Length: 378
Image (cartoon, rainbow, N blue to C red; front, side, top):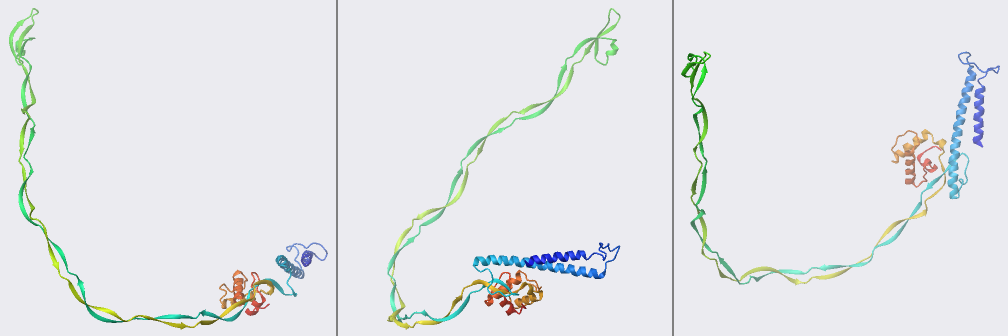
């Protein structure tokens, strides 16, 4: 219902702010470039806008508080507790975790039952000298090694052998004149004087036509030919490889190995021995029971969730939060900045302090007991 009233008030103020921009004659105000607004009206409009923003913030806060209460009511309905008992106006409450409560009792307990201890009385000894047999008489076989001599002997390494060696043929180059055409006679036309350079004219005559012909002797023709001929034909010969011998040294057994028996006499020595003068004994000692006083931690109240007063959001001012952060830091429960912002790290430090002091803890709230001990205003 209150939220509805706030919403109506905001709407009314918004209408008033709009109606405030009207001239005294009831006509709409002109733009600033045409007619300058009255300063008093501007101040009234600014105050109304500020009031609108304040009411809007209150409306948002109330809606958030209503949502939180609805969630708390849902949780409380499960637990069978819808509202905090004996709630007072102007105070804030939350379901916080109340740690378990303990008390300490002292009790005498038995540490060790009565018993007895067995003490061993060691035996007593003395040192005496005795002659004892160190080694009995015996015999052993001694081996006389064989005797060898070194002898030199010539032995055949490889017998005499023969092999057939083939000697290849040898050749030589021969130059000779070969007959190409034999000497002959041939009738040729022309006077005998024209054939004087080529050969002898054997006969000269005139033909029926009056032409002179001569019987000319043409000499034989030869050419020089170079050929390779066998100078000495291929042949074989027998080669004799003489036998090979080697002089070696070898060990020759002259006398074989033998054995002989050697007698070894017994050996005696003087030794120091320990003899028992008085044997070991035992003695029983009574040990009384032992008791001790111990402190027991007994649970007086179980850990539970219940309604407790918490610091209201309106009281969690930046100054109060800085005071909280400084106190938590001095106590070693907070290492973040001193910024006046209630964040997760600050709430975690407050819960850590509450747990260490056995005070109520909450995930989103700070219990009044924590605020009282840390000097917060609430």
